[in-house]
Amino acid sequence: MISNSDSPIIFIAALEGVLFEFTGIKKAYSYTLEMTSNLLTGETAVGGLVDLKNQMEEVKISDELDESASLVFHLFYEAGLALESKVDLCLDQDTPMGFFFEFSEKRPILLSRLAPLLRIETKGPSEQEYGEAFKKGLRHLRRGDCYQYNLTFPFFIKFAPTSAENFLAHCWKDRESIGRYASFTSIKGLKVALLSNSPECLFQIKKEDNGFHVETFPIKGTQSMERDDEQSAWSKLSSSLKDESELFMITDLMRSDLSRLTGQWADVLAKKEKMIVPGLLHSYSHLRSALAPETTLLKVAQCLFPGGSITGAPKIRVMEIIHELEGEPRGFYCGSTVIKTANTLQGSINIRSGELDCDRGVLKYHSGGGITFESSLESEYQEMWDKVQSFSRLLL
Image 1 (cartoon, rainbow, N blue to C red):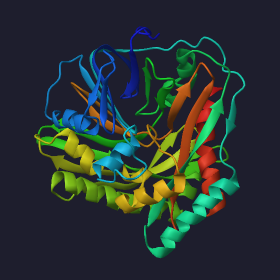
Image 2: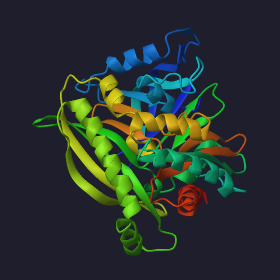
Image 3: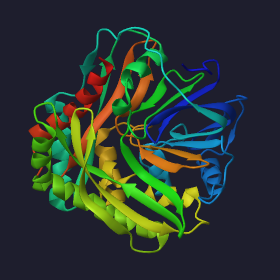
């Protein structure tokens, strides 16, 4: 049961597969490109991206927190454009960059399912709408502008108005349905809540006997398990040259990004492994590198964010192409939620994510995938829908 429903900030997140409610809000700020707002006092001041960067610069990976304390950053996708000095791409002074919260307490939470979710309906782009953007992107591939681009679209999942707790209880009905990096954020005054059921890790930083290490687990390649069992689905996915090329390209990109961060060549511990999420099977790789204890969270973000699996390669050029193809900001979707506790420092990639309005009964939910020369319009369009439907079925 959500205990702090009257709080200006409600934040729930998965840590090691367990849902925690974060309480005792001490600081809460929102950032646009130029302005900073204190969400607890209502005061605003000039700062924005500069203040967000300063806040991340203050956090070192070796900093120790009290056992119950937590720091949370929501980095919106467009903050990655700004960190890469691409402020001119669909950014104006009101473009959201993200949020920062500091909490003093957290506790495991069990959500109460109050009633069934009714009238579930999903609307998304037609194959023709998708195809127009797909074909424009292929021209960039043929010209050599990029090797892979990630194309995404918003979908609208409609349901009968209900409480946020009831919606979440359906979404996270059991441990298997909770994304490893799942989170929910409700901010008083914001019309929509931020929901992610992400299985994907941008980074995980751990302290070990021989120092700090950073790991990343990029996902590329998807196979529906609605028509196949696990063995058959993995046989199809692991033998797909298109999916393998996607994964290997992004693995190389992430290895380069880690090298920028750590100053040394990262180890690839696994090049192609399987990951099972409700209704889908993915392939992913596992990279790891030593990390200096004085490294700041800002440096981690500048080198790794946004994740290569949701941009493509080369990262900066393909972010320009994505702006051209998609035509609207991604915002929370494809951004990262960074959580630092006494025992955890992790950053997600916010796939399986969107904006939730329980009063109106609408979830704006994004989906997409990586496009290479081997891609076909029909299969990529179907994969995008498979990802949305795998989430929709959690709500039944």
